[in-house]
Amino acid sequence: MSKVVTFGEIMLRIQPADYYRFVQVDSMTTTFGGAEANVAVSLSNFGMDSYYVTKLPAHEIGQAAVNSLRRYGVHTDFILRGGDRIGIYYNEKGASQRGSKCIYDRAGSSIQTAKACEFDWKKILDGARWFHITGITPALGKEMLQACIDGCRTAREMNVTTSFDLNYRSKLWTGKEAEKAMSEICRYVDVCIANEEDAADVFGITAEGTDASKGEINSDGYLSVARRLKQKFGFKKVAVTLRSSINANRNDWQALLYCDDDDYAFSTKHELWIVDRVGGGDSFAAGLIYALVKGKNTQDSVNWATAASALKHTVIGDFNMVSAAEVDRLTSGDGSGRIQR
Image (cartoon, rainbow, N blue to C red; front, side, top):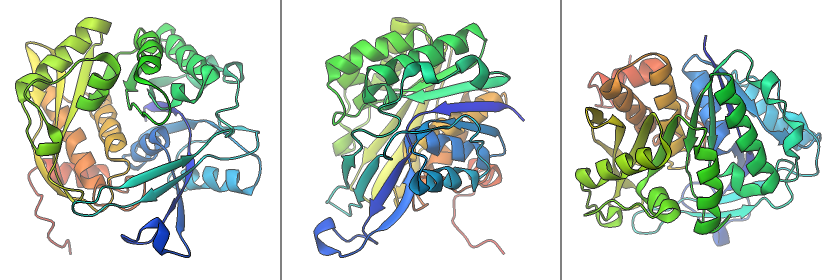
């Protein structure tokens, strides 16, 4: 199996049941999730040799987070233990015209207070085929920014393919802060993953003729975004997801994978009825990594990644609980949702 390493923060997710609002309930359910952890679990479920790197407190809640990864076969050998707390996020599911709401409580978490020098990247990446991070991790502070740079630089030195999902979070830092930090990381990145908001908010690169909130998508505008990102940083590939929101439950979902002007492809478009949107982008990243590692061509890779993500939107929780066989079935054209006996 191909070894893939992801690095970031796993958090405790606290959520009211069903579509209840925060102010309505006396109790909430808990699960674990986080962008890079979501990718690690997806890849493990697809049958890949998946490793996740973070830092967690040594107490029982930290151990519960580790156990949540081990349950799905993710290797936790390089998870550091220490610090005082695990980050928390509260999630309220939206419905129809009411959007979902996410409230963070992650200040002072173990990963946020970790030092970059604690991560031995040469050891961690030994034998690895791929290294994946997102723009959430460097937003956690200077040490985590440096850890991301160190990891990507080491991966480049060791000929490990790197992917970077921009994943801009305005609640964590400003666009200017993100642009400066991400520009430094992007020097060592092979595959960039973004959406129209990431490219616009961080690098000022907009998709002309597009208003995703109104369901207006201009394919040529997205092609221009991918081309300009590649020209700016020299990426080998750029993937741009295209989400058109009809409302909180109904989205159209598509993506573009761009290598150059002679080698690019738009995926099949999926009409989604959303059960849980959290982790949708992460499942796309995992699907793309899997497809590229398996040697699929540009069209098949973007189709596979988009299908993996479409299926994630039907699964409750951060983690994508689908198999490679289920993704294959959808890419083959079976999206009927009929019962399997």
